[in-house]
Each structure stands twice: as C-alpha cells, then as structure tokens.
Image (cartoon, rainbow, N blue to C red; front, side):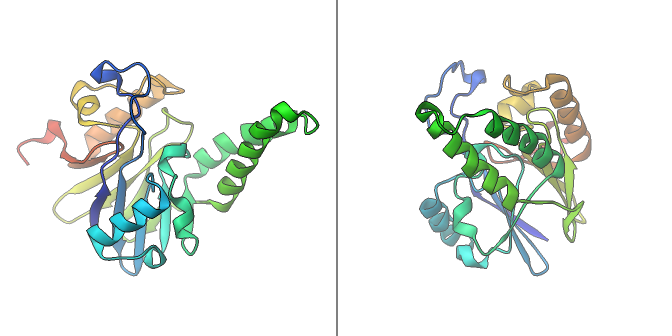
Length: 228
C-alpha cells in the first residue's frame, strides 16, 4: 500500500484566519492510494483538466488508469473533477449517500416543474441526484489495508480512509479535520450539521492515527503522538 498527496486543498473561507466570507475558490485535498491492482483517488476537488495535469505531474498517471474514486463527503468542492474518471468505480459511505439522497429526492418532489424561477434549482438538484446515484455504497474495506473510518458530524455520513502500514497508520480525514490549525486547536468547522458528533469524530481520529492527510491541508504528524 502506498499513498501520495496529489493536490493540497484550501477552504474558501478559513474561520481560524478571521475569514467570515469566501475569499478564494475552495477545493479538497486530493490523495492517490495504490493497493494491489487498485489506484484509488480520494476527493477530486480540482477542475477536471487541472486534476488530470496534477495526476500526471505527481504520479505519471492518466485519469483512465484510476480504478476507483472515493468521496469523503458529497460536498461540491470535494467532487469537482469527478467527471474525469468515468471509467472508475465511484464510492461514498452509505451513511452519506442515504443521509443526503433522501432529502434531495424530497426537495425535488416539492419543486414545481411549471415554475420557471425554480428551473435552475431543479436542474442542479437533478444533476446532483444523478451523481449520487452513480456513487456506490463503499464496503468496509476499499482495498487491502485501506478501510473506511466513519467521521460523521460535519456532514451526515462523512467518512475517512484508514491506511495501515506496518510502521504507522494514516488517516485521510476529509473535512472532519480540515487544516493544521483546526488540528492543533482541536476545532471542527462551524458549518458542521452536528457539532457534537463532529467533535467525537475528531477525537476518535486523534486517538487512532499517527499521520493525517487533512481535508484542506497537507500530510501532517498527529501532534499528540510526537516524537514520531
């Protein structure tokens, strides 16, 4: 099992930097995991063309060589480049799929197809529903030594990936731990739909992993486990 950060993400607005409104285009950290015959791309947050270039620069691979894509959440800036990987299997945690899919379907039913002012909302929802339907519920083990690590709270079913190396464990956290500042201060995103669950997920992560690939940052050492 090997892993590599392809692209370091960023928050559109980082509250720990005093930002209250978007000041940049947010995008998720994108990670490549290789295990056996599987090449798993996690959170394709950049636009398709940029992500394809980054994949070649960092791993000498083309999008067609990616076998699987895993979304830690269904947030738009975690899946912006998803369309570049049409040949891959798309995966998401079942709790995220169901927790978002049911409300989205209900919202679609409530929209009046005859009202022009609701057309754009309906079109966007239909696109999202189609993408979510294409995403399969991920199994507990996505590949050898690559396991799901549920981290609900920021979204209904946010889920990281736990990578088990003989020497250490690595947790790809998604937005459950977005940046090194959030990690060091023990804080979760204020947009969390369930802050209590988000804090529990944060604590579980700190207790388990030696290294983190953060949702909007780089690979970092768990500060509670230094020296490494």
